[in-house]
Amino acid sequence: MSGWAPKRFWKEATVVEAEGGYTVSLDGRAVKTPAKAPLVVPARAMAEAIAAEWEAQAEKIDPNTMPVTRGANSAIDKVARQHAEVAELIAAYGGTDLLCYRAEAPEPLVARQAAGWDPLLDWAAAELGARLTVTAGVIPVAQPAPAQAALAARVAAMDPWELAALHDLVGITGSLVLGLAVALGRIDAATAWDLARIDEAWQIEQWGEDEEAAEQAAFKRAALLDAERFWQLHHG
Image (cartoon, rainbow, N blue to C red; front, side, top):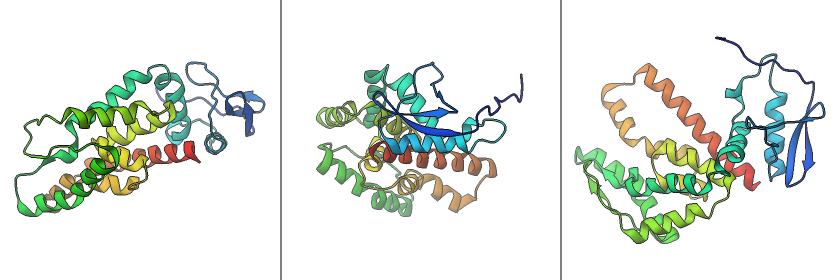
């Protein structure tokens, strides 16, 4: 039925210790995932953030205001059950990383891309053992197998909670390097957003910004910041 939303049925959301970590209780009833699995998270900070999201709900529940809960649901119901597949999907971005595809002109845009992206590619080479190849234009360039293998190994070693966050960090930016840079503390998500949007920012400077496109961009930026917070809560 259009417009229907579940109503709040609890008075208080609290954090409770559970086997394997922490869960959230709604008036004594443990929260479950959409797949009916126990919503148990490994870090108390994450459980407290989830409880705060449930506590903040008004008469009707709005999942759009519950990013940490959604992230935990994804980690439990999807990523943990398909760890290898999700890791492979994320690692594949290393073969077509945004930072490797440069404009051929105009020169100010070329320079802006180089200034923003080269330091991150150098970081990936030094810290991750992955030196990626840069090309001008949109014709695909084959990345060195050792570099792709090094990136894939780094991703595969992550737990479901980390992968759930990295999935969005990489998918939203279009760059495995940027996603890993945020996850590993090289840059923050706001910086990653700006670096991923160098081309779009250039076009906006030249032609102005479309209102609908701006709204969509704001939504994606918020989701990127949510993914960064999810990663940090897991490690907090």
